[in-house]
Image (cartoon, rainbow, N blue to C red; front, side):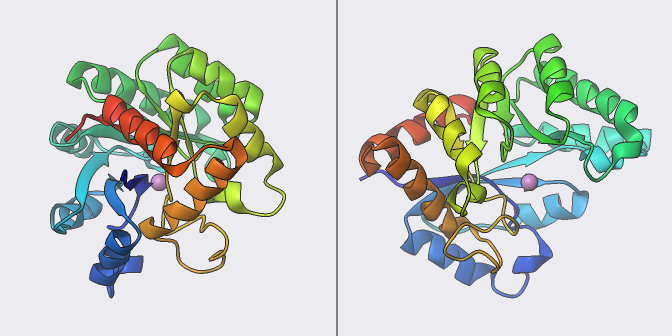
Length: 251
Ligand code: NI
């Protein structure tokens, strides 16, 4: 029987300081046995190194978040040093929703990190909020391997990213009421290009919406997708695990 995975989580967040081991136990109870832990700070990275659980295989990623356009060269170089220890570079990208005043600097920072990811041979985990066209233009010009994490755009744009070879990762909003667009995305992306994630502690899927999110809830997102696609659990999980292996490596 195939198991579930969470391709993007932040269990290094302070939201789990009090009960991380219970969160990890619930992963095992729900057959979520692989997870990518994403770091957006040195503190995240330090905490991530301490996260271990028998029966769960963790990967890790680090990147300079779009908020951090004012980063010093010393700090940037430290991020690069840590990227070498990781399975992926991210999350990196563009966020015009929260940081609309630094668009040009965000683009520079994004491109710089894609180039480093290429040099290191690590895939990119891309964050894009209210910036999908610029994200697309950059990922087309600086074409590489990676995933659009927590994808929230149209089905048409998703197909364009897939044409460039990128994966599309679906998070909790696909389970929410009025999830028309996310469900269209799910149907328009080939199964060979889909990933699933929680992005926890945020974006909690139904029926737990309103509570803190956690990796075990990825099962709700996966089930909603399987239902929409009309495929069985084994087929779905076999392909999702293969996609994760292909992108991030099979360790
Ligand atoms: Ni994230």
